[in-house]
Image (cartoon, rainbow, N blue to C red; front, side, top):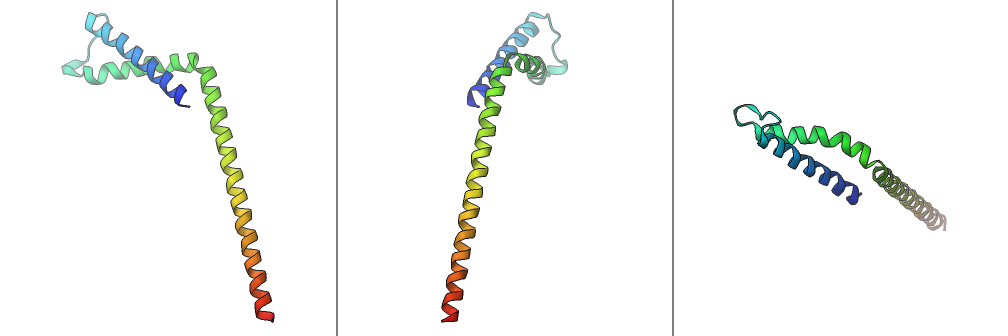
Length: 102
C-alpha cells in the first residue's frame, strides 16, 4: 500500500514539475492575479490522475488484494474473539447455576 502511495505521489510531483516548467516558459497560461499557487497544483493533479490510473493498474490491484486480506484477517479475529467471549459467558452462567443449586 505504501509503495502504491509513493508511486502515485511521484507521478504527481513529476506532473507538477512539468506543469510548472510549462507555465514558467509561457506555453501554458498562468493563473490570474497571482493564483499560480492554486492553478499549477490543480492542473498537475488533473493530469496525474489519469496517468496514475493507467500506469499503476497492477500496483493498485496488488494493494487492493493486501487490503482485502487484512480485512478478512480482522473479521476472522473479531469472530474468534466473539466466540471466545460467548464461551466464557456460558461457562460463567453454568458455574453460577451450579453454585446456586448446591
